[in-house]
Image 1: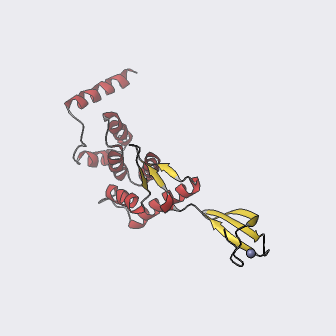
Image 2: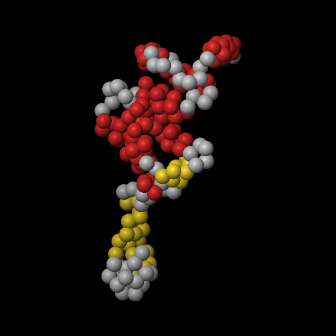
Image 3: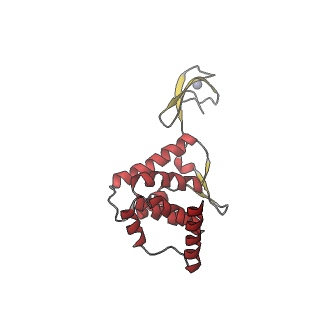
Length: 182
Ligand SMILES: [Zn+2]
């Protein structure tokens, strides 16, 4: 950090405190002795997302925002609530202060918030996010909805995700038998 008065490269920190979304530092130039203030914060655009397949990509707010919107399609959720959700997550990412974050962590953050906001949006998001790689994860989500029959009916009105087949149904019945025995 160059001194804004004389351009000298070296300064010492005289005070350091947490400011909104970052750290505020008072500095003193070691050459001219004048003081200046710097703010340090993690830039959300500088975040790297580590994907499940091992690839890395830049954090992209649009992408996050679009996935939330898609999940909320035709649900009674105001735009500002969706915006707020994305902002919340960015705030949390900044607080974590990591340069790199797993895509699964962001997925969990979205699910955690959608779950409180709207169950249907939550299940939609969870279905895309988890890719229904196994039937269990789908059942897990559906099980969560059993106490809310209205929303479950809505869910069942949507086309089934990629995997469920006849075998899946049998597995489901077996799982229920097993759980009632235990
Ligand atoms: Zn200076």
